[in-house]
Image (cartoon, rainbow, N blue to C red; front, side):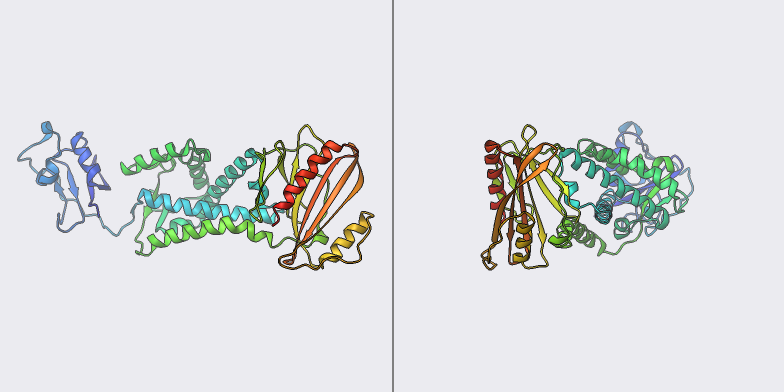
Length: 422
């Protein structure tokens, strides 16, 4: 382990710092041979000593500053307590912030879901929506940390790594102080959450920390992030918690899919003709089955929140009237009952019997109906596919009545969507 040093500079005890930083100050003349240093290593010294008395350090002094026979001009200084709180190591601070950020993201996901939205709607929308969501989650996590630090003096990540934030006099900062501090951290430390700025702002913060200075978001409020005694288990435990938090956050939306109500609770409104698009690049991967299918180039994708809280994936073209939609529900009734109700509502003949559902044999029905819309009469096609697991996939298509070319395009789209089910 690298030796830690304290040094007396301008009447203040500074440290701890590594030998690399200490020798750099000796070479550039920041420290003189007559200055005092101390290391807690019992093999080095028991009390403060002048640099001139330590040959290993004196060799690094500027030649014009080296001196022989200098007299002691200062009284002995008290030895710092190695177990007392000391400035937190930059790596510990980074790990703690990572755990806190993921914890804040997970809380934000739960709040968004409780508010009636769905995580997939926030991550599968347009690039602008994804940027805004990420931007908002980072800011929310920082605000959550401000309240935790103001009321508890620490956060889950800092607690795990043995860190706490305090004023210069050792007291706990208030909420207003922490809100200002977190705002500066967001701007000057994380670069507004922008990937192009964050590496530079974080590198500048790291440089200040290794030089024994406060970060630019702690300096205005005279705050210190100190490292208290921590058990040896906290370091590996931090990585375990970090990994577990990532896993929970990634799998949280998939777990919420299981809460989707039955098909009888789902209401559908025709998707808007114009919505923020995402180019599909002529391919689409079903987020549930993971199956990818090549689509006709030109379709755009947007998502629609259903009244049940589920997600419908809507395909459309800016210069075409045809549209397609696919979504999944879980049925609480036999598929034959669901299919019969759908056919009856559309005025279609009902078959006397449907094939039995088996794990290897899903059952699909398809029918067309005429509907009136603001854009004139359209043909709506419906495909319902039931699975033995209780899943029911709904695939819909719309095109202007008597438009054979658009009908062909939409039918090709629906065929591709259906192939992603198995």
